[in-house]
Image (cartoon, rainbow, N blue to C red):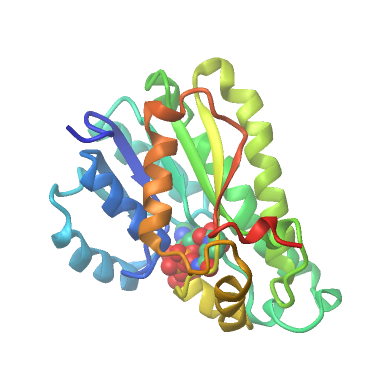
Length: 258
Ligand code: 0WD
């Protein structure tokens, strides 16, 4: 029997087969979860339609979601309400910043670029939890998780405005964990090491980050979306029932190095 048998899980942020969210969706599928998947736009829906054929169980819902649009969040909550009263697991795997804000000096960040990165990469977690509060509460012991990167606490050249957004995201995880603990809802983050995805390709210097993991991390190997998927299964399962407000590093141990 799978670890997530009988659980309904929403996974956001699948852009293509390299997406971390897709690694998580596959791991959840393997463990018997009922999946709800979202796509950002019609182009990405085509990718997702092809990918879902590889799952052992068809998703119970595939729906659009633009986290920067309150109407889209409300529409998603309604669509979810049509298929289930309770949401056991919510995965936030969404981030965006302008290309020009992901290279050079952080000092050059515009007000608009700063707000955009914060809105889509950090506030969206709170917006999503707000929109899905009722089904999360109904689940009794729901687990929410967000994807982060250690550029939140250390300076990673070029990560810039996204590092600041990830700091806000991790702090949001702690405040939401406090707010929702009494309702049985846990909120955690997974801090993944670098993985070559579409989003990562937008950050100048991803190749050197991948190289550094192999050179300097205790486990001299880069991590895969499957590694993140397995950690997400743990956070979604009853085996992590008293863990909340935590940032779990899945980075071959890179973060302990000086
Ligand atoms: O090295 C990496 N790849 C790491 C990624 C290391 C540590 C953390 N992360 C984080 C990212 O910051 C992000 O939070 O993991 C999460 C997932 O990122 P990913 O899997 O690396 O990237 P990708 O496959 O591109 O998925 C992110 C997706 C978007 O894709 P693109 O690249 O087309 O922007 O986030 C989605 C979109 O599908 N997204 C949105 N979804 C809904 N509404 C929005 C939006 N407004 N904007 C972006």
